[in-house]
Length: 292
Image (cartoon, rainbow, N blue to C red; front, side):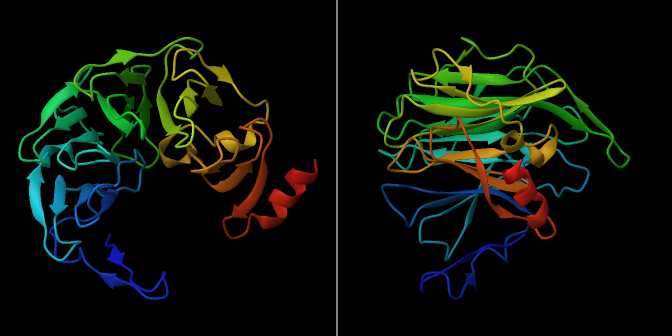
């Protein structure tokens, strides 16, 4: 998988990563303090039967003209990178690990020197990988992360999901972590996180446990959580990339969008939802659902 840079508001694109020796890209992170600094995590970062692994993390300091390989080569799948909004040298990396086998280079890694060295700061065991990580945009001493226990089988749709995941919080810039509970279910398999830029005390998480998926919201920086909607549609499905990814409007914490097989929008903080963008072939079904 390649990606490119645009300079005309998206009308045309120029590839900037094609020459790198990796088969796919899991995430891209641009430093808020310097847009010339770009971090790229290779590997799709999803536990799915149709996946392509990568070979670690890359960095550019000239807006993608040249690239340096930094490390985490054995992580194979890197779904998320968070850059400290005060310091482009401080990053947190969620590493999913080998999709078909156990390995120790998985979990959440931290670098304070621009990726020259990495420290494993959140780790359970060789079967539980990192799924998501993000900084509080107003106070980056606070960070959140999620872990995901999953494995692919050697045949189509052969998967193993375990209860070793969870949602975690750091109050020292990612050096140490505490698992959150306060209304969250036990035995979390997978979760995707979002933080409202205009009100960082408000968080949202799509959470999968065995047999159930729900959207949870916290209004006190993760201390307590509640299922925010009875509508099962926006939460997505258990397994791989079908669990929805929530994102807040940067100016209005009441406006939330989740992306999955169908994209949904809420204007009341996640209580009610309407579909506004669907994949080909699903538009008529979504309209029917909205009218039900």
